[in-house]
Length: 121
Image (cartoon, rainbow, N blue to C red):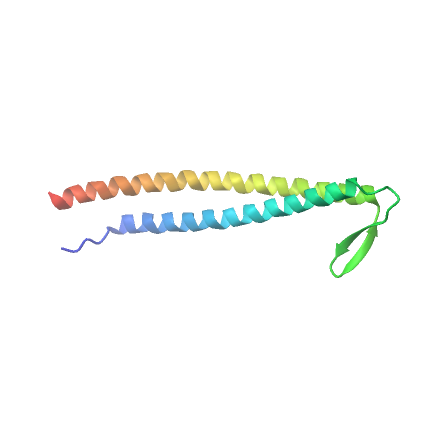
């Protein structure tokens, strides 16, 4: 006797796999954003220890541009805030997808236990 899954279960299983791949992708995006955030924090910490009269530079493309220390600190803080917003958005997405993954897993377990019961009967 063939034990193929019904089409509906196959679709749910496929959807579950897609959601798990999406979770992996979101995890990678979040880790990259956290790395950027740490780099910005490090740069801000270094800037805080630099004397006001010391020239500071920012890399733009392939050139260095001299910047006012206060302006550069403001730019970096703005970037850091944007990254925090992005991290929070990713985390919200992750939570929604985890909930859906859990729902699908429960649906699949219930359906499989029901179908096993009817097969062995």
